[in-house]
Length: 135
Image 1: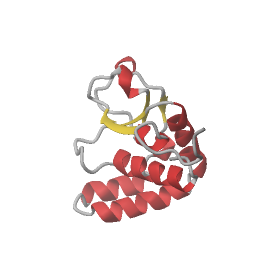
Image 2 (image 1 turned 180 degrees about the vertical axis):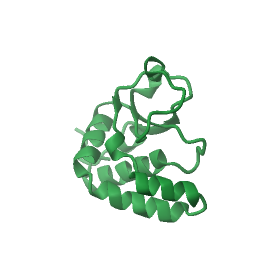
Image 3 (image 1 turned 45 degrees about the vertical axis):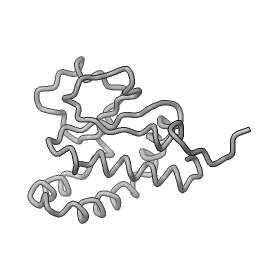
């Protein structure tokens, strides 16, 4: 019998990955979910192979523009975006449910692979699942 607190590589939080949408889709991506507000430039919809486009969970236009002008303010961006995510509990819950079922790959278009909204969202989802006792 499994405990209510699941950990390890099969835990829902560990099934949440991030990937630049311009990288080739793979079966191992599981449910591919685009988490950008704008459609990625030059990306054909059939090539994206999306399960879902969840633009409502992306940073607000105001925050997105602010971060573009202040790329050195990663921590401030993270804090502001997490505040926005807290107001979208229904969307966070939906993404967490997908992670309970399968691998979820959060897709983003940014050239910056180290600092982008998908990374913040992945970490936020992992923390949310931990609070809910699901990892």
